[in-house]
Picture (cartoon, rainbow, N blue to C red):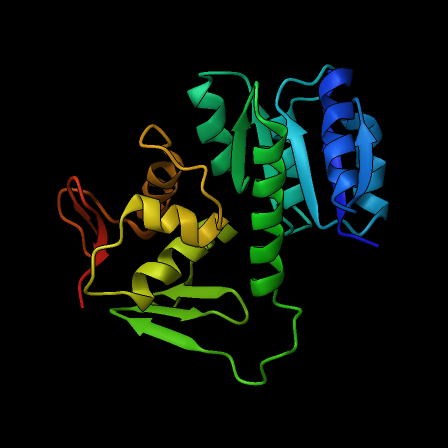
Length: 233
């Protein structure tokens, strides 16, 4: 049996299309046209990923995202209307890992799902392949890659999986500039990046807010304009 994926979208044609493409990749799909009926599935089923439409008739998809994040850590991909920048930022803030803008290419959606699942399984704290967890330490930051925990000045830093991955990559490559495109490809492992894609920018902004870092006087994440991001060695 493949990974279990929740799909919630009140547009039947879109939900059915997503279901068909995911099932063709041997995923098990739990499809719902409303948030309320999906809640029971969320509470009783061990899911691996959720795809949520923002505009739902019975409950805002962002609220549903927030409810999932209260108890679960699997990846969440939001479906957003074109150019709804506020919804995208809000979704990422509430714990979503990625967003797809409608209309979308089904194959792109499948690629993003696979990338999120790979990353989730790679960094899922329940995995037991490694007996000793690698720890990265830098200027008050202590990151445990295996347990997915991060401390800043001995206080827990609550990061989403994507934020954690970005910070990990920058720490592992500290002293070197990492472009937004490199970050995107390493995290999502697909080729659907374009210069207009500001997903990484949004996540970097949230990271800085949580770390009390600033663009003007960065202690940790430095922007190298026109090139990328860097943590000084």
